Length: 289
Image 1 (cartoon, rainbow, N blue to C red):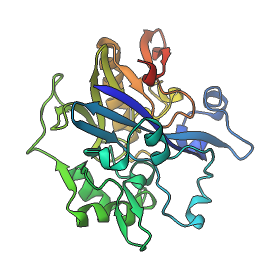
Image 2 (image 1 turned 30 degrees about the vertical axis):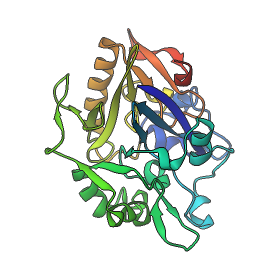
Image 3 (image 1 turned 180 degrees about the vertical axis):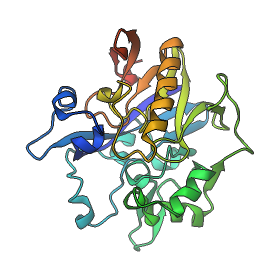
Image 4 (image 1 turned 90 degrees about the vertical axis):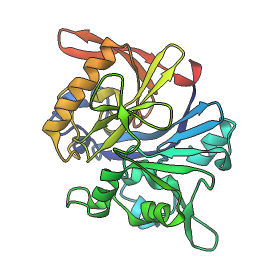
């Protein structure tokens, strides 16, 4: 499989919310805030080429919301989903599959676009869109903590188009490491985590020299590798701790290469055990592997 990091844009969020109970004096060492306590974040997607299959993992925020929406997220930079795909040599119609790790707007907003007619349509006409069935149900009846992150215009057009497909007990088989890792119909496994949101999917993608482990919102940036660094957005933070500990344990044992969806400058890294727990080792640029 060949991997292409896709830079879909940059935005800012409150640093305290991104690091939960960790004091600013500590997290600012890796994620320095601006004068408003906001930190830079990326929406970095991943394109996986496997023979005739071209799978896009997550789609960034998109651009169909009104200006009143975007003022809360302080967009910056010139990168966008379609432009970055074009630089990688691909067009929207080339995509055969889109795997959405979860349905928060910054992960699935680019899955749907507003056509010149004003209609909301899937951005990838030839693709099957994949999401965990239980997470889909969760997103349609959101809890108070997540309600602002689940936008109907990002997800309902996928169902209405007939392009939506579900991952569930009918097409997830036991993975190589046992639960919570499962084999998908897409040619790679996923680690399923429930701490950040119900049934988040973290792809584990085989490469020539190991596994690319997609951190999604379990480990969104390089600064979130230490175990206690859990986002204030997580609906079950103690569950995140358990899942993160297992994920990092396997990552070190099996020499996974960690891919960061939200780190503003670092695509990924290898990991090592230290006296203080698992920490980053070597920084990685995936499009150079």
